[in-house]
Length: 209
Image (tube, rainbow, N blue to C red; front, top):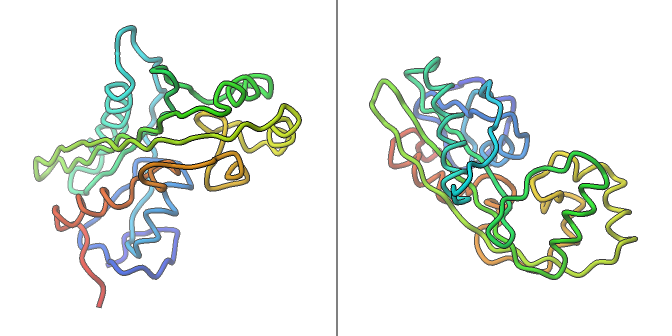
């Protein structure tokens, strides 16, 4: 089956049903494509709200992932729709994406030498089959203590500007990460092991060959 993915990855799995990724993230698209499956990309038309007072970070991420998924599932009722949201949490507070170079510097300075959490919430919906499930994965990340000049050099690349926490572990920002405890792909934006398990259980993918 070919459901229109833009990728041609030759992975060990194949799509058994129509799968729709409700995300514009090229990182999530590449991770999902690495499995070898075909999928459509249809980002949700959704402006992320601010975290509500008293709402814990995991609840916030779950709510965002579910809403993105729900909006696309309303239009693609027969498909398996996959939505996700990734947040960076330091000292119990969600760190968003920087809106300027100065903001990125403040965020990265706060992260230096500390442990923080990266939480990805995943929602899977198939309206026709009555499928609606969600889960979340947490990875702990320790950043190195880089100096101001090093941080400014990284920020000058432009990479931090659309990244939660102002860094990309899969990109040039990898040198800032000292160690991780948990799923690497979760930090990139999609916990691939857990996502694949869910898709196999739903019989949305099958082994190739």
